[in-house]
Length: 443
Image 1: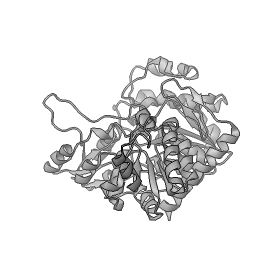
Image 2 (image 1 turned 135 degrees about the horizontal axis):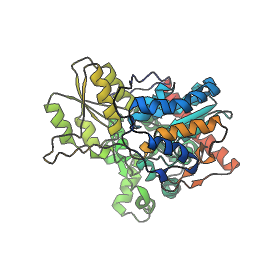
Image 3 (image 1 turned 60 degrees about the vertical axis):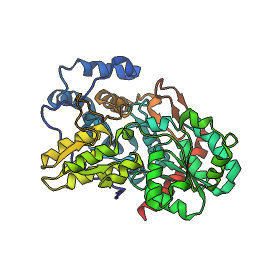
Image 4 (image 1 turned 90 degrees about the horizontal axis):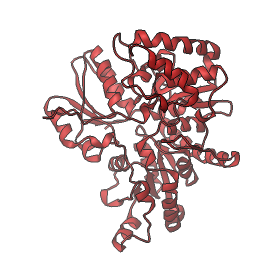
């Protein structure tokens, strides 16, 4: 099993190919903010989505902004974004990375004052927590979220934390997965815990275990089980709590005597949310591709039974790098988000590497069980164009500004923003947890 981390982002190697559609799916016009609709109308009126059509339209808006801002503008995207944004962000001088790499970019690049992120809200908020006061972070679509994080909102987790803290006091430490809001990262910082990502969870949880404290791992249940196995925490030392509002309604008092005893003896308590994209994979999918001669690589958000039978597991950066460095003739089956695998398939083919989605096992009905992150793909070319052009015009919508502690409803875009005093407290505690992750990872 392997993980890989890097504070500096290298080029992904993704190439734009002629005649390949840039956008896999158009969003309805009413999905755009009012300020973005004029850009969306122009985009939707284009005759097709091929690079030779879309790129000249984007160039008219983005090149003036690049000239206007110079090195003070930084464009970022996550690997899971639909292929159009992943390819385009690098074309315009931006960077693509996993959540760990993205989080570090503001701190690593003080010259970047205007940071535009095409991914999900929790990633943008992590960048904002680590940013300097003169660096502003913007998200192209504030409704871009994460299903795992949606089942681990602060109002769901905080009552459970209070219940656990009342029983275990300072023996309790929170480890917050990156896929959480700043408020939950602050909970980790306040308890002397840390943030982790899939690329460094082994180091962070290993460090937490050495502290001899009970770990409340929020979320995800599958990564928690996988990492517990990696660091030697046995299954009978893990207590699985519920996720979402079901988890919020659980209490220690309502547990049976046997379950309460298991909770008391547990080394790790797992919050029960998960990534819907990664739970589609099954051990029989892995075995099928292994029998066909493929090396199977999986993301550790997959169920532990999948990770245990795979040939390797690691973060999105690890998976991407395995494709890019594989020798010609290699055959790789990858279990992760569908847009990522599609991009890996295209890029792998350019240097003779065959890539398949682990979920694409032969099916009599011709079905594919793999899927993309639909909420992250709410970012598209008109969102990117509109955000950058409105920033150049000094007229960006405040809703797209990301500050520590913000909570955004992914369905309505309604935002809850804390007072300056509350925000400062959340930012300080969240930064403490992020800094501990960075220290453990980089040293």
